[in-house]
Length: 547
Picture (cartoon, rainbow, N blue to C red):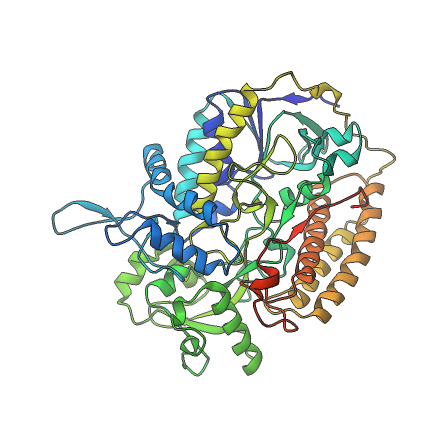
């Protein structure tokens, strides 16, 4: 086994959350970024909409906070919302300093202003964007800055397997009595097939979302909930995982894969229609097609079930063709590749898993319940989003929380009273594992987990559906556990192990919440119950019986 990698700050993930944090902590020590594909490959890259931030004269922090809290259906942590919203303009300035190019227009006085867009749930135009490729632009400037930074070392095509904590040395009870702390992470080098040890007193999990736990998702293939699953197995608290946001509009086409039709299309006046051309969102919410995502997704789901259709249409043809091509150049070209000219015909769309409002429970500084462990971005649950995320608040939260986490991590590193005994971390033990000649087991279980979650733990749930999902997931978990410990680890096996853990957490969380709120809708409990359920759902592993 290779000698351990030792670093002051360890980061798992290379989206906006991880890279922004890396740039900040690199001023104070050595940094290692572990990412399971190329550094540019993250959910950030595919974010079309933009960053919600108060920058116009007719907007205010009060209105942005109010919109966020209203969308969050009573579960937002108000103080967290206020902190993140009020730090938005500062984050925009920092991105501009790094070289980000956001869309602009010239006002009557000849001054350049942000071309602000409006999305579902927002009362004002406040979405700063780079055409319809905002995430790619942010990723571009962050990757460029990280690659130039001599204090940052990048480990591409490396996938994290498990956190190393003091409970690996002493007792797992440390994980639930406040004495546990991180020491680093075991990481699989996908090229060599070897497990490497990364040691650090501070570890940030910025691994993104959980979309691939479901059959249909707007997320890239990397979104397998790795950070959440690792934190769960290490004994960290996980919060609000029942709140899975289904984006109302993903392209419906047999050859399309994870193609999101941006919220901004409806922000520019796009209308949802049935196959007969009739609009329907006005029957569900006063804001019509600009209603919060959970309401729009459920409305589409209801209409599809009622009609038996596989999709509905999103119609933006009222806009002049030049304006559509100007505002949505990338989306326009993508649709054309599938034979759809969005200037002259409506786009067939279907809901798909888009974002998890839950994650590793963290405080205002991104600190998890295990000492030395931080989480930001979609892997974290800060309380910002409550039971439903307001559109384009995710990049904002990732930037602000990563900035605060960096400050706290540097402070913690400086104030260490004594050096951590990182050398005490045990080396990886392969045991009696052998190479597998039956990888079909991995692909089959992967497919069954995703179909089970889609069919029984989707947009609309019930006690019966959840019970059926729980039973099937328990059987699959036993199969995966046996397979995991008997055979050599591969990247696919690591991800399979993670999605079964995340599926289990989502089901447990959904069973626990005896009401319907935000993104969680249970037919057996159709009402929102503020008296008994206006609180976070916390899941924590109490022993080492996991996969």
